[in-house]
Image 1 (cartoon, rainbow, N blue to C red):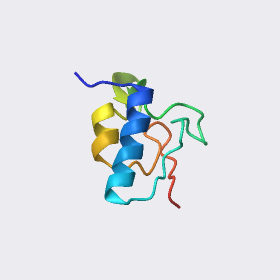
Image 2 (image 1 turned 180 degrees about the horizontal axis):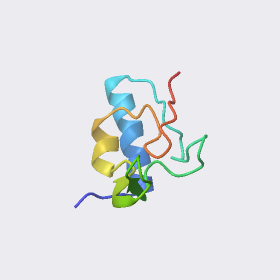
Image 3 (image 1 turned 180 degrees about the vertical axis):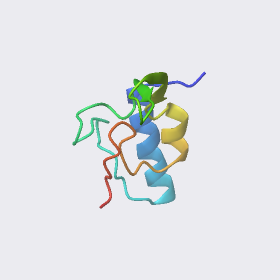
Image 4 (image 1 turned 30 degrees about the horizontal axis):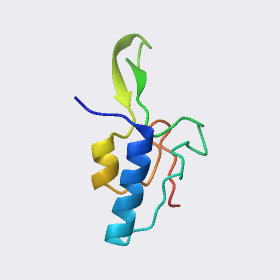
Length: 85
């Protein structure tokens, strides 16, 4: 199961950027400047049929500890706001 932990994720992203000499685009505390949600916390979203609006399921957004430690964060997983434009 995926682990969502703000403190570990913030540190993982900081370490990744430092070690690989990458720009650190993600908010330093994980809180998105646009939607105000924490990018390192999970959020359940509803899937809807685009024609009828009927709810057909759910999906999760958020950045796991593993993702934050291995991938450069360039935007919000919740609202899709880019941090590097």
